[in-house]
Amino acid sequence: MPSTFSFSMRAYAAAHFGWEDVLTVTWSDAEAKIRSEYTGGVDGRAYPVTIHGEIRGPGESLEEAQPRLARAIGNTLPMIALSANAAVADPFAIATYGLDITEAQPFIGYRTPGADEWFPPGKRAIDLDGTLALMEAMGRLAQAELLHRAVEAYRRALSYWIPEQQLLAGEFLFVAAETLSRFIVESRAATGAMEPVA
Image 1 (tube, rainbow, N blue to C red):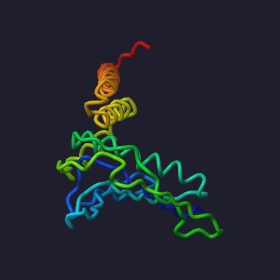
Image 2: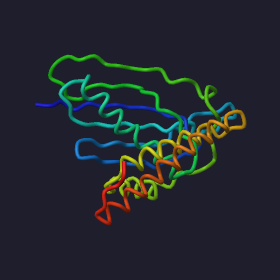
Image 3: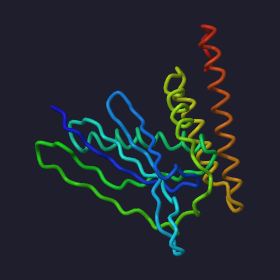
């Protein structure tokens, strides 16, 4: 019988969820809770620096569950970046562990770099309902994999959108546009019962 495992991550972000907002994303075999983490600044105020997410789902072992759960929750970050039109960095794993395991398995923990190792938080707020609606709509598309690739390239472009790295941002924007155009062609071909050309 499978055990239940938890995987948690953090990602620095230039946008944030409201103080009490929690984005709940549900798959057929897992559920994730995603929110902004607020940390104290030197001025005594709380600032949203990272997005924190935890996903729980069944698995046969820690080795099998960790990469699958990490991929699932990691795939939400490009859609959050797109929804907010703000940079979201690559996620850092925090911990993976079993919740109801019957055999002893290791706890895996990680260190998250400090806030000064990435760009400062932005003031842009993430629309909770709009982001969830975007995720649900993308999940229903037949060509969702292509669209996810385009959105991931756009997330990377946003992360490089600083004066010193705008050329790299432009390259990722080109990849996003190219992949998006292929998505559009394949979507229209599918609705017209045509086979897209390779």
